[in-house]
Image 1 (cartoon, rainbow, N blue to C red):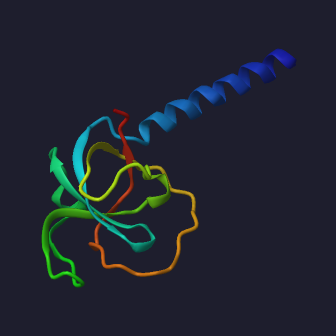
Image 2: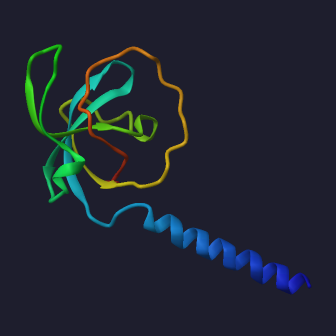
Amino acid sequence: MKLFCLIYALSILTVSDHACNKRVSNVKYKGRLEIAGICMNYTIKLLEGSMDTSKISSNWTDEVTGKSYTDVFALRNPCSFPPSIKQGDEFYFYLDTVTEKGCVTCMAYYPKPPKKLSIKVAEK
């Protein structure tokens, strides 16, 4: 019986690990943090990579500055974003389909594009 329980537990861990790996796409994109708004209201521009255009805002204007942006999206998972990346920095990332657990952010508003994506920043 103990052997059966051990095999069962190992099979669940294997399946779980396999499922976790599928949650992050294997396609790498290049982006730039365009706006690091207050309270993690981040806007990211897609610089390299072919992405479904329905997932990003092809044209968006920041109502505070009046500046227009192309191929941008809001960050859906700000608590997973590395604090070392600053406005203007370029970085590589993968799309992440993991349902993000809630995180605490302040409630101050800064405009961001209507399209949001969860991403995982690639290690350098």
